[in-house]
Amino acid sequence: MSGLALLVAVAFAGETPLVAPMAPEESVSDNLFLVHVGARSLDDDIFYDPVEDVGTVGFEYVRNLTGQSTLGLGLEFGLFLAGETDDSLGADVTAAFVEGSIGLRGRLDAGPVQLFAGAGPTYILAAIDIEDGPNEDDSSGGIYAHAGVLFRIGDSLRLGLDARRVSGTEISFEGFVDTDADYSQVTVAIGWGS
Image 1 (cartoon, rainbow, N blue to C red):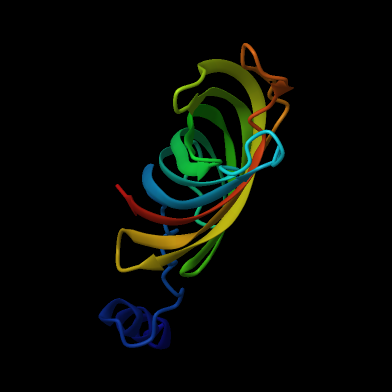
Image 2: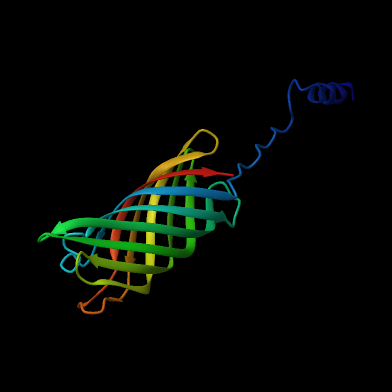
């Protein structure tokens, strides 16, 4: 009996714990805010020539729906602006796009690295302006999909790359042939979580 009492006394004293303490499960940020800067290439490089390669900036908000530290699912909202102006045959040609999207986002966390992919519906407003010529706009729905990687820098800062693809849009500018606003896009993403 004295041996058992000694073992209990040592265990409570912290010298030799009988059961190793469980590490608390790491949690992820409920909210993730991202700013994107990059470029997109429009699929219809004949109609949009010479402005088929456009600069883009965007903002994305991700609300995590699950708190697991390894795998997770979230709801994402995106707003992107893109545009380009160029001189073609002595006239300025400007193409501009405003896009809003909502979708689901899956993620896989591996230490300081997070892989992610998302998809959903998107809506694009497109405009074309030719100096001393037509100024037209139209809008269309479509589907987007994207994937990328984020690296954790400090407690809340993230830095990474995002590759995005939009398809299924139909744009009709009056006086022009029908076209679309489909594109492929790559951006640098800077984010922070809360």
